[in-house]
Structures are given as C-alpha cells and as structure tokens.
Length: 260
Length: 303
Image (cartoon, rainbow over all chains, first blue to last red):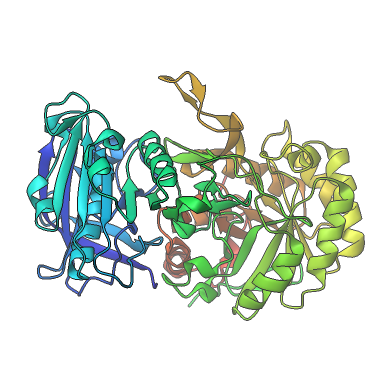
C-alpha cells in the first residue's frame, strides 16, 4: 500500500480520561485507504524529550466525516503534547503503516472474538466496524484495571456484543480477559488481540490450547516505522528478526516464538 | 543559480546531500514520500559477507534530541544483496553506495570484492566504526594500526571510490583519518555514532539488550562539527560530514567546517523528506550569499 506524509487538521480532541485522549483528524483531501490493525506515525514538535514520531494505531476511520481517529494513551512528553492539540492545529502524520488484521473471506457465521486491553482496545473498534460491514457479528472482550479505564463502550456496542473484565471487579467480571466466562460458553473460531504483552501472551496460549486461530498486534519500540532502521524487531519461529513496523504489527501467533 | 555538484574522489555527485547508512534502508523504503533520485547519494544499510541477525530486542532508546541504537548490523549478507536488492536499486538515478562491514580483515575484503563486481555501485563506505558488534566494526576504527590494516587490504581489491567511515569514540580522530588517507582511502566520512547508554530507573535495568549503544541525532552535532573541522586541517582527501544534521543550516555549517559533502541520518526518521529540503536550502543559501558553487563553502569558515 502506498504510504503518505500528510498534514492533517485537528477537528476534535476529547479528554476521555486523565490518561487518554481521542484525537480526531481530517484532511482537505479524501483520506487514503487504511486497514484495521495498521498504524500511523505522528510527528511531535517542540518537545524537549520527544524526538521521534509517535507510532499510534488506527482507532477508527469515519469515512462520512473524512476523519481519522487516534486513541492516545498519555505516557510521556510526546503524547502529553498530543493531548494539548486544539481544533484547527495541523499535525504531520505518516500513514498507513504496517499490515492489518486478516479479515476472513467466507462463512459469515464464524465467531470472531476481539480482545483488547488498555490502549490495546484502540484498533479493535475499527476492526469491529470493518468486520460488521463485511457481514460478521464480532464479539468484543475488553479488559481494564478498573471501571474508569473502560472507554467508549457505547461505540463498541454499535458493532457487536461487548464483554468486560476489570481487575478490581468494578465493571463486568472480575479478573483477566482470559478468565471471562464467555470463553467457556462460546467456541470462537478466531481471536484478534491487542494490549499489554503479558495479556496477549496469555490470550495466545489460551487460543493455542483451544486450537483457535489467533492474531496479535505488537507495539515494539520503533524509530522509522517503515522498515529502514531495524529497531523494532521481533524474533520469528524460524529464528529471524523481522521488523514489527513492516512485517507486523499484526502477526499470527504461529509465526512467533511466544508458545515455545 | 549556484552549482551544487561536488566530487568525492572519482565519484561525481549532483549535489552534496546523501543519506546515512542504517537510516534510509535501501532508499526504496522512502520512495513513496519523495523522488529519492534527487539526492546526491544514498548509502545503503551496512552489509557483511555473511547474513547477520543483529542484536536482541530492545535495540533502541530515545534520548533528548536523539536516540541510541544497538541494531548490530542486521542484514541478509552480500549474496542476498547482490541477488535480491541490487536489481531493485541499480537503476535509481543517483549514487547508490554500499556500507561494507566485517568481523575480520578477510571478511571486509571478501565483502568489498563482491560489491566491486556490481557495475552500478560506484563507491563503498567502509564501516570501521560500528559500536554495536562484538568483533570487528569499531575494533578496527579505534587504533591507527587496525584502521590502516583493513583499509590497506580493501584498497588492494577495491578500485572504485573508497570512503572510510570513522568512529568518534577515539582520543584523536585526526590520527585515524591520516592513517586511512595514507593507505589510499579516497574520502573519510565522520562521525559514526557515539557510544552511549540508557537506564530505566524504575526497573533498574539497561534499556538496550546490549547495555550500551550508538548515540545519534541533533544532540551529537556539535561534536561531529568539531571533528570535521579538526580532520579538515589534518587531511587532504575530501570529508563527508555527518552527525545530527536536521536542516540546510546544519549542512552549511558542516561544509564551512571543511566537509565537501554531508549525510543526513537519524533525522530521516522525523522528516523523511529532509534531504530534499536540505538540497533546496543549500542552493538558496549559495544564491543569497553570492557563491557560484557549493564547493566554495568547503572550509570557508571565517576565523
């Protein structure tokens, strides 16, 4: 897919939570094609500590409004600066980068489970939307520490059933996503997951034990985002280092060494 | 309009702006964003005779105005380059230069010989300054004996333009520059990354898998500029300056300090089109200041 460097204009920047903002960006031109699971690299200027672009996964693409949505977790100075963007500000964005989740081609009756944890819920919204449009009925399982960390439930509910786990039990079932009762009630054909690595590894092990196909989205530290610097590598089963930015960020767990 | 063309040995360049090895892939990664043939040259990823998997992840740590890397020369080897990458890049209308590395004099020589067979590669940049590999790399670049030995051996088998990339992790870079000049290098490029380190205080662990790594980005520019200036006074061969360049003004500064050409490295990650902006800025600078050629800037520091 052709990549673009675009100056996008901020239309809205909602502070969903003290640690998250939802940044909506538009362009005078029609935004390029983007696939769920792909990411963008956002340039952050005037930061004393942030030098490189910030890789952010595509949260949603609103074709009607010609908007790209980014769910940004405020981690360091760069993302905190992104939280300060105001409507009308111009942001330089490189997109779309990497490979998306695979969309099954037939059998619309397949049961698809989308598991997101923390900011890893971001790509699941767009994936759910695309799956629904393709005729599937996706199920979401969202994990968080506490009720206040579960963001935008109403948006997910537009595209499928939503189940929640929180570590403190303040919303949904108490515990981790891999303990949720829905996993015992329904046999899923495919799992897609994004979130903290320990969560994704637990999901991958569960999927493997149950012989369920599973794709994970990685967020290794990266510099260029286009396969030039070779910083963001992940080891594959055949003992090679591959770039997460160009060979991923989505991998089938069969390709990785996580299950060894 | 000012002339922008420069020569490095027998290498003719349409302008003095190149991209640094390890920051621009094989050039084609950046082709969606710009016409890469407008660059004076592209130094492709470090290549070794045998494939290398590089160091373990994590390999990168962001630092104020820069980054540390510990990639460790990951590449698929000279044969793979020749068979699979060269056909894709040989017709790009600029100087496609291969950065050659090794772990012994023999492997440097073998790799240089292999690359010498490729018609459309007019030059190599000999990397005797990679801080991220255990054997070879910087080990050759930090002593005059080591540098002389490897350059002498490669010079015998490599007839085209030979650029030697120098390490800043030395007491006196001019000694190394003189040593490689004496062995027949056509040019020196400097600086490679500076050895650095990053620590995660919360976890009490090093950030990089290798503990130490190479520092690059705007934070190293003053050191690079100083070393270019010192080297300019010490050698007669043309100097290619690099280290933290992020705009045309930085390029002018490196030329004034004594460089004939420059390379842009880490900043390509921030602005993939920075090279084009530097070319345009250099031309504008020459026109504004009445220079008929960018070549007049080399060493033109008014002291």
